Image 1 (tube, rainbow, N blue to C red):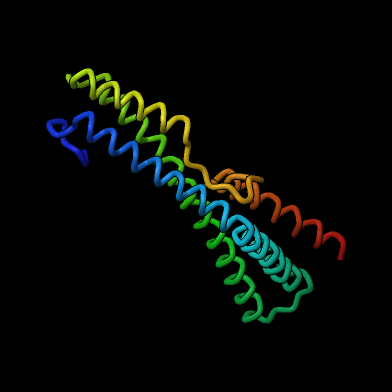
Image 2 (cartoon, rainbow, N blue to C red):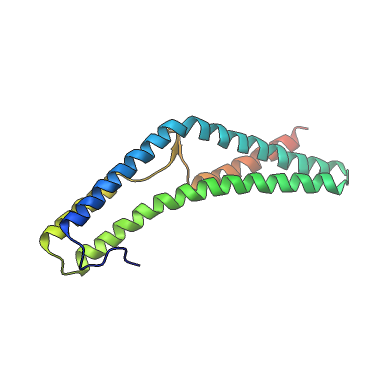
Length: 168
């Protein structure tokens, strides 16, 4: 759905949108700076607890202790920690993809419409701004929060659980 109709799309409107995006980008950078270390702590906490919960379940299954309530609790904890990790990464991934989709919509506007040249120039400038100021959420600049990070963590969790089971 178009938020702004093509009739009201003027160079001033696009310029105001560019200013607003610049402010939003500055706010996101401030949030990354302020909350990078706490988010790193949360991700590490989730990672450690997920490994522990999966190890807990595999040890009970391996030793033959068939107390269903302990296995059920371990499975619930494992799933809840994975769900937390997935939601955190999914939200950041979707926010980053939204800025990429806006670039595609701007290109469509520039190519397919009969807009005044001033508006097209502002749209091109907005496209350059969005391309340069990409929205990514990272943890202390070490790695980006996205779905590829989530799947990497899944592999690491599985590796740790396998190693822990082999050495006990």
